[in-house]
Image (cartoon, rainbow over all chains, first blue to last red; front, side, top):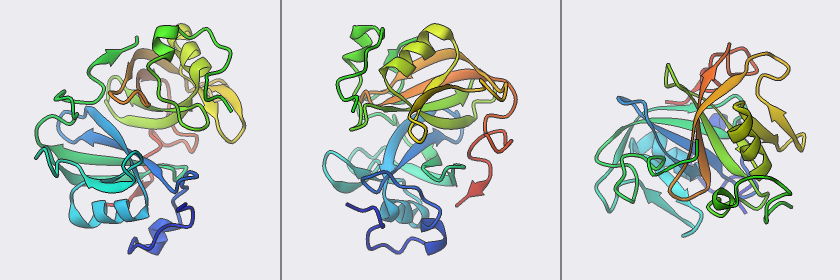
Length: 118
Length: 118
């Protein structure tokens, strides 16, 4: 699909460091800058990362809807991006944000609140 | 490959809630219990999750080596598991650990220390 990256304005020096999965995506872990809670995990292709870096709003690729989505676009529960880091493997991003309202679409503060296995 | 889950002793009630990718895996975000730093992201199949839940040591599936690995098995930089949570989508785990030594194989404290994009 997008293994070689889509048409995007992402900085080529950054794009060259990404190790995308078969669908051209990297995982993006979103962490709250203040509480330091892990809020959610989304997926980004090159263009979603470019938009996240340049717009200051975290932007993901929806695997189910096959489209971009800006977190909070409809709910108002936006994420203002303070920091973006790439891991040592190049296949995961850490996005540190100021979260407005609950991060989870269920209304929970984080997407990890509801189901504790251990 | 392992879409239907491997032969594993993972609690069927937990296995039924997992939404695995095409390779039978879910992402596992590892967070330090004390510093609350996001340390790394690994991948787990049903059996890796079972071992993580029952052994108290975080255990992953290596996509490159196609084998299980216990974090710190060779380096000594083990992760003692304090908490495991499943996200609202069932496709990501949050593993909260007591980390011994640096979490990254590069010697960095976390896998996100070296490459800041924003």
